[in-house]
Each structure stands twice: as structure tokens, then as C-alpha cells.
Amino acid sequence: MNAADTLRAQQRALQHAIMSGDPAPGLLHAGADGAPPLLGVYRHAYRARLVAALGDNHSVLRRATGDEAFEALGAAYVQACPSVHPSIRWYGDRLAAFMDTREDLVPHPALADIARMDWALRDAFDAADAPVLAIEDLARFDAEQWAALRFVPHPAVRLVPLQWAIEAAWRALREYDPDSGAEEPTLAEPEPHAHLLLVWRRGLETQWRSLPDGEAALLQAALAGEPFGDLCERAAHQGDAETAALTAATCLQQWLHDGLFTDAFC
Image 1 (cartoon, one colour):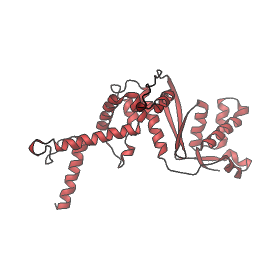
Image 2 (cartoon, helix red, strand yellow):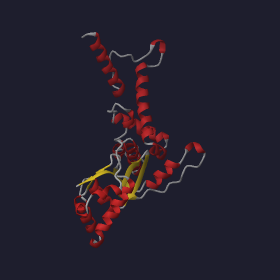
Image 3 (cartoon, helix red, strand yellow):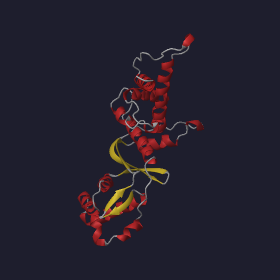
């Protein structure tokens, strides 16, 4: 083994020792003359930085749980879900699912939905840029083409399944500034409520709103590529068949106003 191969082997061994915490024969575990353990310093720094990244990506969740509880949750997540992405920005995508399995670390299941909302908004903010389809752009289609019209979703659009009505609490915690001296907001007990949260970005600002079931079903279909004619049929099954086209058109107008699509085609 030449010097380059030896160096690479040592680097891989050091990386494994830091990330796994396993014994690392041949690597320094203690400093000279009673200095702190060298490998332990790197292990602690690695985990501390990942927990800090979780806090950055889930700032509202951290406020909801409190620092001490979040540190315990973060440490357990780091142990169970090592970082697999070169950028620390993307660390934490599995946190909500992890929280669903750890009742010992999560005092209320609604906290996992707060984590989902945190992550979706961060994810939407970093999504790719793309043109926004305006309602005026649809003038190029003839009336007989509308039934076959399909829409291309904007890369920043997210539909987030939630099981709890956490939006009001999320907003209150997001607006609360711990350094302002103001009292921490008093939050009501979250109510069970299975629904979809729409998250997207307009310019550099992330947006969100809770969707009623009827609109949620239509938007899911539109984002999946179903043509406008099928959306009208879905609207007819939801209620009055005579107003189905108007219902679908009203939803489409709102989606275009929000900037949820980049293009349309037949």
C-alpha cells in the first residue's frame, strides 16, 4: 500500500469513527500530557453541528419543544439517521417520520406535523426557479381544447399531509421572538384534523394555506397531470353537477393567482 492509499484508509477510518462512535484502533483517543481525548472532541463537534442544523431547519419545532427537549430529540435522530448528503442544509428530511416512532421523545404527536410544516417551507424556499403561468397565458388555447388542458406544477409546490390542526400554533410560534422580552404565546391543545397543507413560494417568499377537502382533491389531481375535463368530473362527484365546471374554474383561478404552475399544454 502506497502513501496515498494509506492516507485514504486513515481518512475513511477517521470518518467512520467520528460518525459511528465505534472503537477506532490506531487512531488517537487521547491527547498528550493529559489533554482532552482528541477523537472525542471530533465526535462531539460532529453531533453538535448536526443537531444545530436540525434546529436551523426546524426552528418552529425547536420553539415548540424547548431547547432541552429538542437537544434530546436531535441527539437520538443523529444516532439513528446519520447524514447522507454532502450539504448539511438537507439534514433532517426524515425527522418527522422519526418522531412518529419515538413517543418517549415526543410529548404530543402534533409536534411531528410541526416538523413536517417546517421542512416543507424550507424545502419550497430552496426549490428550483421556474416561470409562473399567468391566467392571461391560457388565452392561447381555444375553448374546445380546455377539456384536455393539463398543467405543469411549479418546482416549489408541496402538498403536506397533516393529521393535526397545527397551523395556528405554528404561526404563533413563528412570530414569537424569544429575544424581544414578550411573553411566550399560550397555545391551545391541537385538534385532530386530517388534511392537506399547500406550501409554495412566490418570488423569495414562502407561502402556505390549509386546503378544504374538495379543493385538495382537485389540486392533487391537477398536480398529478389530470386534464381540466377530469377535474370538472371530480368536482361534479363532490357536489352539484350543474356548477362543477364553475367550481373547477374557480379553483384553477386561485391556483394561477398563487403561482402554482409553470406551463399548460394539451
